[in-house]
Length: 116
Image 1 (cartoon, rainbow, N blue to C red):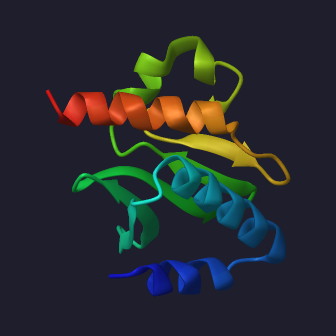
Image 2: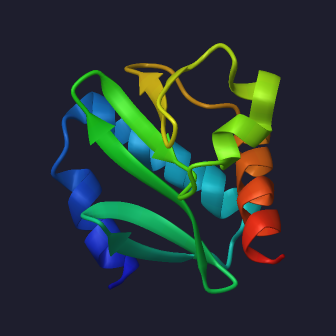
């Protein structure tokens, strides 16, 4: 799996989804330039120190961000309070983006869990 496969996934989406996915990808790589890009569970995923720390996926109404843990979003508390979500995913409406600071905190929380 490689970044070329992530490129292909993003290219297959609608224009609005492509823009959102590409921006979120840039945010993650800006925070973790050495993150490995892969496809896992049919979605773009990002590995840091060998651990998947985030997935992103196109949805009908925008994109979703998955921290690859059922507990990270609960640990984030008020930081994710204004977002539609499930136990494992934040839903980002079309035309909006997650703040880079939120992505950074979610990845930090994920890494803290896997490094215990």
